[in-house]
Amino acid sequence: QVQLVESGGGVVQAGGSLRLSCAASGSTFSTATMGWYRQAPGKQRELVARITYGIQTNYADSVKGRFTISRENAKNTVYLQMNSLKPEDTAVYYCTLQRFGDGMMYWGKGTLVTVSS
Image (cartoon, rainbow, N blue to C red; front, side, top):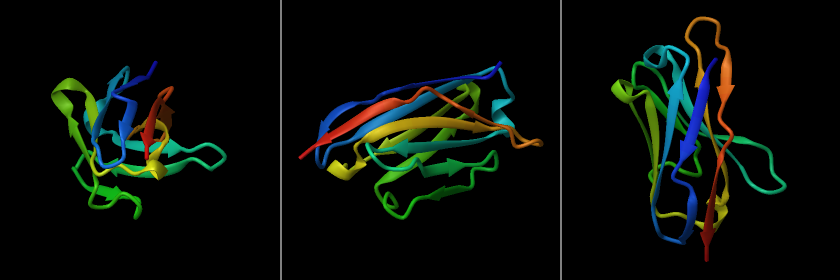
């Protein structure tokens, strides 16, 4: 059973930084594509960033140059470093694991990020 546990959310002022972490268990982390999605109040869930096992990354246009996704396979952990935060970054952030081969997607329960102006 795959489990994803996010941490690092909280309240931060605009212009500040936060680092989210997601610890994975129950699946082959090293070959999985890991991602971060977010859902703001009243809005659809959207992809924020994604990193493949080959360390290829892609980002939403709205976070390019401010957010960085990385992974540490030895710890089965993926990170999202968020800098220059804006009030519009306020959302629940979800970690995802997409299994290599069959593409099955797993979701964490989410962590809330609130950016105050």
